[in-house]
Length: 317
Ligand SMILES: Cc1cc2nc3c(=O)[nH]c(=O)nc-3n(C[C@H](O)[C@H](O)[C@H](O)COP(=O)(O)OP(=O)(O)OC[C@H]3O[C@@H](n4cnc5c(N)ncnc54)[C@H](O)[C@@H]3O)c2cc1C
Image (cartoon, rainbow, N blue to C red):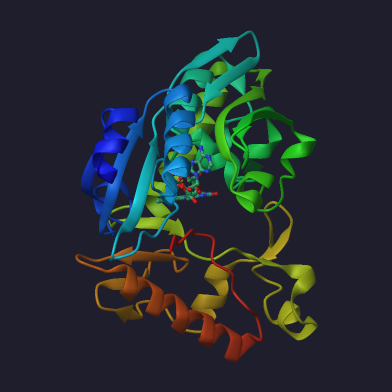
């Protein structure tokens, strides 16, 4: 039996040659050799087991809002996380990894539950947010997480307490070890419904006004720089732009502005004028264009400020 037939037998619904650009907010990425949209935890677990048993490389893709998929595509199985069940009981929310953050913000807001307002306008899923400890407007995913159910390398379903999640700035144990998140429980608080909804809405408005949402992108390309780790001369030079979100940082955007890199372009990939930590796809940008642009920015910032910028986005090989 050939590989595709073996896959189809065990995970019905698997498809061949699916263009990944249609599954990423960057609108970039070649074909996945195989592509499976997993709608339940059981289907996610099964797809991983099958890929492992066939020795097929696999990649977990969710909202596709923090990835740069290669132009050559992915020569294995892409497992698209689409488990979308959730339950709200009193102030606790349990949700599967594939639930969009927009759904959680909306549904908890409606019930007058606060803690997720910071995520107003955040693209992607709960699983993606937990893995990267996504954050904005002073809030982070970790703030409300009680526990997370994930699949480890041995294929065991395990529960991780908040402490065991090892959350850090844009990081977690799931990111470090490549564990697959199935679901998470969050503890929220009762609050004023109108106020909660207004705050989330204001964040959405802010994003529309300040971020280049008119072009495809993957959000911020670089992590902000931990102030403690930057040379003192640079700290002094940037003291007017230091912000505490979630701890004192020099925003990567400020470094890019002062290095005068806004508008820099490789092919159709461009450093946004509107938000300089965004690279936007002005038409038919390739992953290669984006990677070249990232390399140029890193080199300029290193030369000018002796800072090594670190990518926030994921680039599977
Ligand atoms: C316009 C725009 C604005 C953004 N603003 C912000 C912001 O303010 N703050 C911020 O932190 N981020 C921001 N982002 C980035 C992005 O939205 C977040 O990182 C988001 O949490 C990613 O979720 P996702 O479902 O899209 O993940 P994907 O992009 O699909 O995946 C990202 C990574 O997570 C892994 N992954 C996804 N789901 C799982 C899972 N269930 N288990 C294990 N691994 C998984 C993938 O393998 C991949 O490595 C922005 C992006 C865009 C496009």
